[in-house]
Length: 550
Image 1 (cartoon, rainbow, N blue to C red):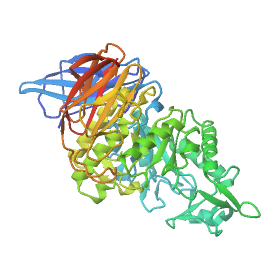
Image 2: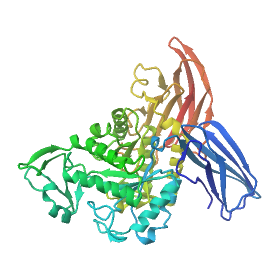
Image 3: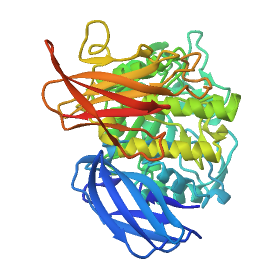
Image 4: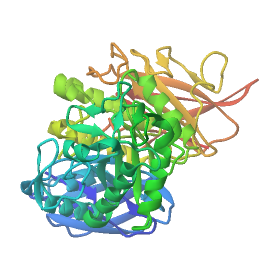
């Protein structure tokens, strides 16, 4: 089996980039490496000698934020072959955070290849789920232990994976619930806990006791000390500050009389205080906070978190809710932070693998087209289907190959998905008497309606972009249900208002043999409303991106 991938999940600006070409027993004599930035060729490099494993150095790229596509043209006695991958460069890794997970930490898992596989998906931030000794005592007193859900953990495996991730340019995030404690800890600190309106202690699945995180509470001080230990003693890059979505209000027993606490008014301060303390120990710690069901994102998005992270639950059930969540999160953070959706795909657990895979392709397209990132993939080609990460499901080899191509596509066209200057004009520039974008077909929607082509339109001074997702043949628009293969759409025609001559119209899709963008023919049209271009897309399978270079 042949493979091509970058040695790191992400590269810094001007950092030396190395690509690894694996041929095993395939007989090829030489190769030509072509590097593209969008539709433009950026570099060509000839490799005259190939071995089973060939590391190809292509230098650095002086761009603050850019994605690149890679094509390797292999030549041998029996013909030619093309392999593709992608990489990105950034002046600050936090500008693009692709989140994955690991949850297996027994001794046998030390070299299981999970981190290496996540690197191939360009995952540059990895959540270490349920790695800790106790939720109230994160770093273990000895190397081998059982965590609170009963899984066996070898702390040496945890530390080895942290080190491996760091070498691949990946941030390791220590899972740490903000208010969960063991029964033993609670019994020794009962007045540190949160209580309900009946003045009974809050518990989660009868395992975790919910502790008081309000400002000045002793648990808050203790928690931040535990976070500091995780970074200093274990070597993590940052903290995944988890919550359970409840309680939203609770009573403190730190005073003579119970006092009502509104948790949404406390979380932002907790995040900021955590960063302030951690920065005393390490430079640039990474912080992610779990807004369960999108709560309380209005308060936490403006804190010092590095990304707006939302765990998606009902009633956010439909495709248009995915768009809504991303757009609102961007607005709340001033469009300055990555938006990550933890949208777990139950069909991989409850339905057949074929329909689950189709749901994954469509959801990936939906999140990325709207400028978000998806926490779904972890371990060795595993996917999350529910909130407990230890019960993950494994993708088939075929599904994993397609998902990897989709993630390559995301990175290759990074600048069309994650440029912060792109403005979504889907609701204002198409339909009714909005003439800026016109479709020559009727079965389209900007809201992710079943049975239609879902169109998202984003533009800035350099590009006009149309992101097409095929929902034709889908009987409903629930993102968390299995899907049939969409009916292919043919010869989709568009007319777009332009203010002058353009440089070109281009089409790219991960559903074709190559992710390389294709130049489309177009014609200028002049009328009383100005200058327009008209062009057609030959075929839409699942996901296609059209971009007009102005």
